[in-house]
Length: 277
Image (cartoon, rainbow, N blue to C red; front, side, top):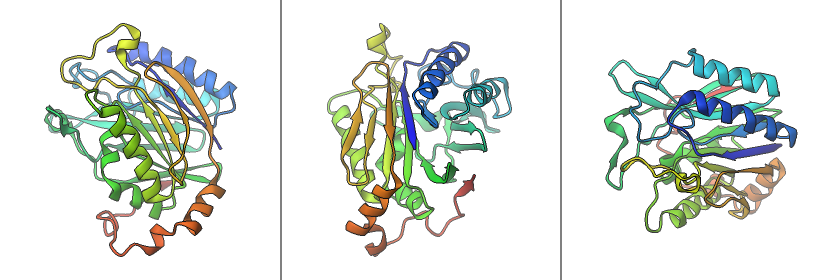
C-alpha cells in the first residue's frame, strides 16, 4: 500500500488549513497514495485557545475533510479538536475515506517539558485500528510514542503499520529523541511506523506560540526492522512510501518479540480496540 505523509505548517485558522488539506490530498492521490496522513493539530496549530476552534465529529470542519477524502478517493487521517462536557477538548484524529469512518482520541497527554496538555485536553482511552485494502492500520498521536504498550496493543490487534501524526516540541535533543522513539516503537511491535510531524513553523516565517509544541518536522517512515526508509527535514513537504505487509511477516518470524514476551501490555486486558473496515 502506498501511504503519503503530508508535513505541513498548520495555520491558527481552521478554514485556511482545509485549503492546505485539499491541495495536499490531491497531490498525494496523484502519486498513487491510498492513505494520506496529516499532523496532529492540523485543524489549528497549538498555542491558540482550543475551545473556540473545537467542533464535533459531525461538524462542518470534519465534514469538509470527509468531502475532500471522498472526492480524492483516499483515506485521510488528520488531527483536530473536539469538545468535551467538562469544557476541555479531545485531541482527535479524524480517519475518513471510502469505507472508513473512525476517530482516535489521544490517550497519553503531553504533560512534560513545561507544557500541560491535560489542562485543556481530556485523554482518550480507546486504542483504534482500521482496515484499508486488506491492510490493518493502527493510529497513535505524538506523545503516545513514548509508551510502548500502546504499540504492542495495536500489533496484538492486527496492525501491520501504525500511523503517528505529531506536533513535536522543539528543544535540545528533541529531534534525536523523536527519531529514536519512532524507530524503537517499530522494533518493539515489529510494525511499520509512519510518523508525520508538523513542519517547523520557523521554516515558514512563523514562531511557535509560547511553550506550545509547534513542530520540528522530520517525518519518518520506519520498517518493522527499525530501518529508516524515508525522511523529511524541518520544512513542509510530502513523503510517499510503499508499505509491504510481507516485511512485517518476515520481521515477526525473524525477531518474534511479540510471541516471546513474558509480560502483556497494560491495554491487553481492557476493551478490544475498535476495528473497522
